[in-house]
Image (cartoon, rainbow, N blue to C red; front, side, top):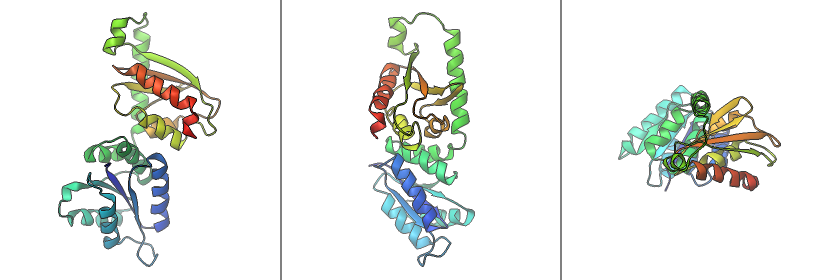
Length: 244
């Protein structure tokens, strides 16, 4: 069972929209909307949020994300009212980006704390990914020598692959989420680059930020014990058109 998500918003439509987007990224994660008041008016309702929290938590806990200040208070009150308040976390994160990042983390089997952290780290995900990618590129430039079997076995060698995107929408939301999720469980650091722009493959927002489209050539670089497997998984995923 994965960690669930609750989207607390002043508008029912806003909450439902975020749920729809998150569900595209993580179809096996329970994401529940708690938006607006029972009569459809704008606002947040404690009973509605509490019910959504109960629905979202299937045993692994739940992370709540909110749109505005008073929604945060409602979410925190709902958590404090639980029999075990430690089973839920209110994440201070941008609603859409945080929900996407948290949903992908939950889909990958991350625990409650890690899912909440994925949400709060969403804002800096792109820049962090870029920094890591730059470091990886620098490492590549400084270690330009033939790759030996020992290096590959210990994960110190870099595995590099290029591929052309053939799926219709490129690396937009769902394909980016699939790319990130396909690396779950592997011991590898992977970057994806398009031209001079690079992103950490573990960051769905970073991958989306590349803006890679159909026909674009992307470069995969991976290090770590499972580097080759990680690259192959992405190559296979792309060959399947990202299952579209």
